[in-house]
Figure 1 (cartoon, rainbow, N blue to C red):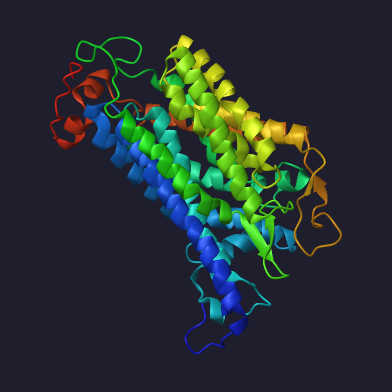
Figure 2 (figure 1 turned 180 degrees about the vertical axis):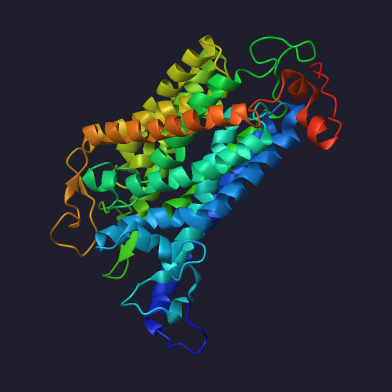
Length: 454
């Protein structure tokens, strides 16, 4: 039970210095929400007009189902790595951090710092990571939008939030099993981007293509995107939100505000921010070169996103010129994956080229370019399996991390898909998609599109 108002006040938990850190981590939640807004704007600009409202609203509902599930149990799974480090267990973490747990429901100044120092930061991190649990499933929806039945998607959101939370324990932090063994992922590319991509590999195969994408339907001769400039604005909204998230992926220790990354690698705020900017710049420049060469507009949007994703595992350890060169290569990888899928009429245009392609490329590149860089463990621990910076970056563990994250996504979907298909069903019919899900589900007449027969 949480202490009542008469409990002792522990002033060490609510100092001005701790408030500054609280504000820094709270800013990450704001950045994450801007990322969600950007994804929604992209969806409005790049979804067929007759399905646009339904596609956006399903993403919103899925986000908050994921958010609530993460509050219920997800955060206690991620936090378990630090409990294990201190000699406690997963069960202890769940007792403290599930939705009814003591630490999740205690006022910070009523918690003895000898029991749990910096509890405010952990409570804010709960909100922060709950947003990313929602982002995982919003990204998945981009792969299966219009085709997936809503109830099936919402059930997937619950299960995938729990599994991705378990994966975040293993791969994102500083003392999780894979991270502590050498897997380096500054921004959570593994559990946020590769995991839903693994799920998409199964679901996209089972759901097939949308009407008009590769073959004409009697009422949809071709799939047309209603507002590409709006989609581009969504990309820039994501660019605006992510710097605040980057700030929240740093830990700050005395003296004053010594910054280390979430993986405990040496870094600084300025280097991380500049790497972020150069990743977008490199991706945009190469994406534009590919787009103008091939006359395909998609690479104007995929390019900067691919550059960002390729750098996300290593904004903490690159220097900006290295980041720029790595980012220049990312759109080329995305191009190869995108063209491969299009030739085989695989109706997935985002997660496969950006995450399976550029994300895996980025994880491997940091293993090649920064091999031997010390990281892992926890600041202040000088010996034992969790000693500060006891581990080193290496390409083998990067590959292991990629396989584990994609594999967990594939396994999750492979288990869920036959169950959902045999019970509530998976796929909206082609006729419903052609009519428009806005009309089928909500009775909303779609504004006519003069460019196509809807």
